Image (cartoon, rainbow, N blue to C red):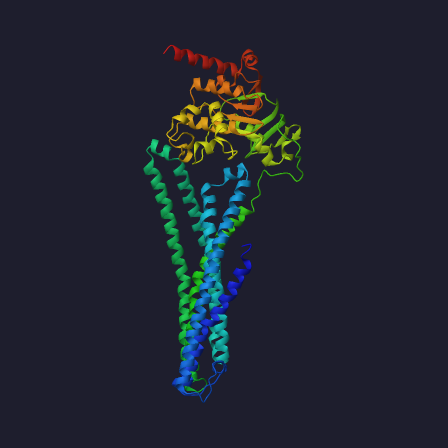
Length: 585
């Protein structure tokens, strides 16, 4: 609310003032009844303000009372317009800032957080939870102040006109307070259950939208629809159950407020008969007592809706208070510059109680190529993720130019590393914007050069709009190989010291892969890490390592590994056998 706090709190003060203005017409009408209709010459502070005396004519009094009522109505309407406009602007402003702040927070959180948190929960944080906060500032805070001010001012005015009658009516207040406390304690759990179910529905919807190809390929539309119907039904049943439970406490509150009004009216009538108050005062009492019903009837819904906001606010607070597992150290060493050497010294990693990497020792000099092979689940992708500090090693060190990677500023580190993965993500934008993602100011010529290196230029130029072709969400409309080549072009285009290729050519044919690798070999100023399953992808690397069960079991050049006759030699023989089979039909 920075920049809007003073305005907002001034508006809340004005809300209390408007509540007073809303009650004044009932006092004016009471004076009108006594002085005009009943001719009782009841001159009070109000009449003195309106310059009405016992000698004033009935017509003059009536005109002054009517002008006062119309004037108050116009003034309060103008104030109400200003307050509504200011509070709603503040609410929209606050929600916008809150969403931006939460989104910034999400950008700082580590890979482990995203792995453990359902996407639907994060979407709910950014949308429905912030919407609840917006509604609170727009309506709920306004209503709390309005009803609280109306309640207190009404009690004050009732006590002013008849302290005895007000004290008798105050016997209802402990019961009202008890019911309010029950509602307060009762509603949070109900809204918590409803909010959690909403998050489940968000997660399922998000998964299904991302997996529509798989769902259609396996003809599981009915199954997924049934899952959503079930969740939607559970959400509906919870909402209905909440409504029923709320009505059980709302109905007694409503009944108490009605009884209080009826009882107060009967008492006031008795006081008139006994001559203790005037008919005008009875009119004022009647209006004020009924004015009490609005805050009393609204308190159930207001407490319930505020508790709903409290549940969302807690979710937002928990997200905002989440500390990233990976963050900058207190004392950074900023003199590392471009990456010249990368060294893993006795690096081990445990995730979720499982050992992923064991005692990894590597050193890669500038411009060299390290290839990483191994069976599925051996830890290849996790190993290169350590270089980006998506995770930190449990033991050991990763050194960049001799400096521990944890002492290098994260943004500077990641700016020096480009990556293209098998699991490609492309943005819903032009091909040119996807390639130049690391530098939006990149020239078209530079983007084209990167596309040529990735062997993507030919198919891009055949598209109707060329580099200005809009890619659909997640690259829809492009083949897997085309998406991989655009992702590779994006990595090549980045001005980085290191380039990581994680099974980047798995979806392209052998001929295209060989052409891409030849182009990559010409990039001698970048250190390359290549994760692959094909021997053709790694055989020209300066060093090849074999990862098995998180440990390096073989290392050397292509020829040295063939001579060791281990895992690498076996993969080489299998690949040659496949070629022979393919050649012979």
